[in-house]
Image (tube, rainbow, N blue to C red; front, side):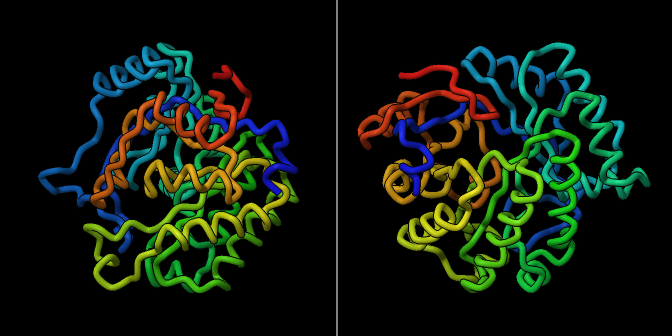
Length: 317
């Protein structure tokens, strides 16, 4: 299936940076080791100067995208996000891939606006595309157990639907390895497949495994193995025949398993991830360079290529 969809045998990657603008979050998901309460000593909202310097450094390293995500901070309103986007776009030419569906739904609720109007305001301010975070497993049975304060399945899908209808492209993700059953995974894939059939707005699908370190859920939930990861990745490639790209997750699996994933359905190596904090908070800190990714792709028998957010190839290696 992978070769049928991508017969040119190219494996892509993007140079970007994860920037978490705050670690304060009211959702307090049981699987998360990153969030803080508003009054915690380690709680923060990113300083504007620090943010701009991070973006400047990303561009100097050949980056074409910043991934902007954060917690649901009760003190931040929609104007904070639109102002931040406007300042970024005024100073830099870079794609802003930002704000997962839970963040957008929270912004809309606080502002008393519809999701569509909130997305339109963010888009006008400079938001280019939306990451698929906050999906975990699109099964309300699972969500009510591991993240009861987070938006439900219908709300996650509705944010994505509205974004697609506004002409914005998004990714979709799936975090597995907690308490879900195979039926829950199938329900998740079916929900993504159906929305893609309706809108065509997903550029890629990214399955990854729960990292138990440091989280309350980690003390009770199981742990998905590399074999589990590869088996589910293969299922994703077979099931989601209307989503062009499946992304390997070296961030959670390490570069060797990500290489193997290229033979299990993945055609994209994800990001160089100049910075990553959420998975690191769970005690997993794989590090790779751009050259590591290029060499890993090439030694797996594929042709490495740097892409942009929308899977346009910028450079072959």
